Amino acid sequence: MQKLQDIDIRVEAPVDQLAQHGNAVPVLHEILHALRRLGETEESTTIDLRSIPFGPGDEELLLDVLGRGEVAVKLETLGASEIYETAYAGVWIVDHRNTEGERIALQIEITRVPEILLTQLADLTDSISRLENRLRTPDGVASQSNPMSGRRRDG
Amino acid sequence: MADSKTEPKTLGESLRQQGVSRRGFLKFCTATASMMALPPAMVPAIAEALEKARRPSVIWLSFQECTGCTESLTRAHAPTIENLIFDHISLDYHHTLQAAAGEGAEAAREAAMHENHGKYIVVVDGSIPLKDPGFSTIAGISNLDMLKETVAGAAAVIAVGSCAAFGGLPHASPNPTGAVSVSEIIKDKPVVNVSGCPPIPTVITGVLAHFLTFGGLPELDDLGRPKVFYGQSIHDRCYRRPFYDKGLFAETFDDEGARKGWCLYRMGCKGPMTYNACATTKWNQGTSWPVESGHGCLGCSEPNFWDGGGFYNAISIPDGDIARNVGLGAVAGVAVGAAAGMLNRNAKADAVARHETVTVDDLEKTS
Image (cartoon, rainbow over all chains, first blue to last red; front, side, top):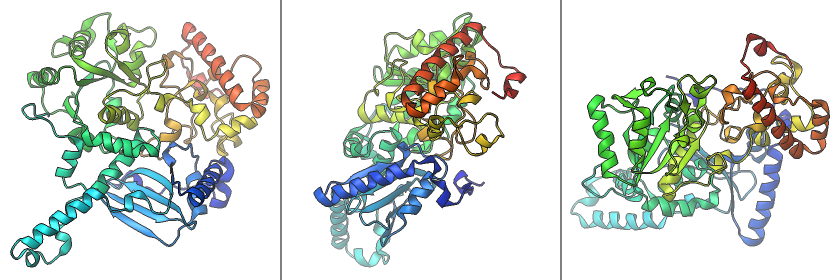
């Protein structure tokens, strides 16, 4: 059965004519101010786009203006997430999806690296433990040729 | 169903046991913060709280209702309902979703009440008939008796949908069943009204998630609704608001204004007097909402919206000088918007008193 997100949503006007609702421009100004703060004080900012009253085309215009930059990361945990730096260094799009592929959060992070990309301490501790166990087990290395098969189930 | 013999795991323990990484947990917390309409800066606090959270028992009672609220909830997407039910809450009784029936179902309700006394949540959808208990019964128990009995040991009650929150459609004039809301009966427990016909699914789950996360209820407005979702009017959060401020209105569903997406105020939009999260949270996984689809807000999250006059007639346009009001709106939109909201509330109260009914003429009315 076709899912809702599979239906191609038709935007009624070309992107360059979608500024009429005017809700993307204030967000872009907010991003500019956040970038300045990041540069001056290292303070990071996150903007949750769910709380913004966007009209048709506003989100498309915003993402079109921000563009795509040099880094794109696919995160596979509890569903797929796409995280990429926009054409403006320090401005990241964090697009979280659930296991059904449905969007559960769309945020703009103005930071050097989004927190979720950093290796978390709990995961680091778990990694040490698992690798230690594997090396301690006779034939532990040889028993599983695919190193990814020993990874915990995340999604 | 909850296992009463062992101490339930915390959410953090449960997720770790399922192999979810800390990174995955942070993603879950981010989605939860967004769903609860809390600022992203709250994610670390939410993570700390959810790490220690234990699954609350939830008993869901359905009275005079249409199942639309459950239909809405089961289409919630953040997090998925399956996760919500099986991982994050223990839904111990729900007519529509549970497999058990008859005596087995009632035994599950009584067991959940006994085992979680003082700690469980009661969710109610539907209004309660007071005129004759026979209008709506479950297992031979009147809705009134079941509500009182079940709520007696509850920590809090969540009235889901406008029927449970305000009486809704059954309460509409002439109210043949004597329908009342939950809060008209329950006076000794906290009652949260999650109004809407139906409520936005993520608002329902957001309130449950708030209880799961913080072990308490969110701040409420004067109608008992969570302020994070009902704190601002549809009008003030509407993306078409700039057109209102400029005095640009659609007059019919197929005129130039409608095609250009202008304000629907003059077509009966109840946005100025309606408080809900539709304008930002939207529906169908954030795809759209009524105004974005070209239809005015019906005001379904407000008390007595069924009796507020025709959805399409001039109820939302004050009897006074609308042109003057709109002209002022161009220079003082917020103030006039608020004033219009007050005028609309008065007009609505008049309509309720007169009990205006919707006719075909209303539907075809052009201004």
